[in-house]
Image (cartoon, rainbow, N blue to C red; front, side, top):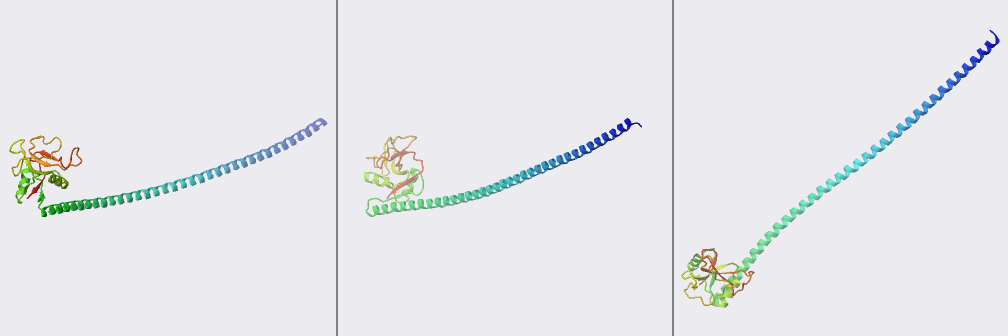
Length: 247
């Protein structure tokens, strides 16, 4: 082996050694890089898991708040419905009580009115001014007259302004009086056959509409033109109403 070969050999070993050292160094760098990248991935995964946990926690808290709010709302709604039902029941009870009290008051007023009428009748009867009573049943004019006659009376004759005012102040309904023209159309007579000399007709009456031959006293105080001295009306004799009897 000559000298050149020896140098070449040595040189080749130096180059191999250098290349091996570089390869070893490069491997270490790759391992460090892999380790570094692994650490970064682990950090990212940890952060991601942390964010997911936070989001799940927030979602659970929001869900709990929502469920609690809905539960409170349902409870409040139930309480409101119960209070509303209680209010309705209370109002219904109060309405029933008021209706009952109103009926009692109406009955009491009617009783007092009837009692007042009776006292007036009794007072007038004692003075010999009038002897009146009302029939208790709704009847035609002729049946009302028979009702009176069965009790020793007849339908009332009204031949004075004082008597007309008095009877008008007492009645609260349409009532038969003892006047008709059933025997001779247009010739009004009282039940004692005496002719009519003074009438207390409502405006436009008598009009003899639909064979209206019997006379009623109209109590409608709210009707235009009505007054105690303008309240008579002719009506069909078959219409049923109470009659005023006079002994």
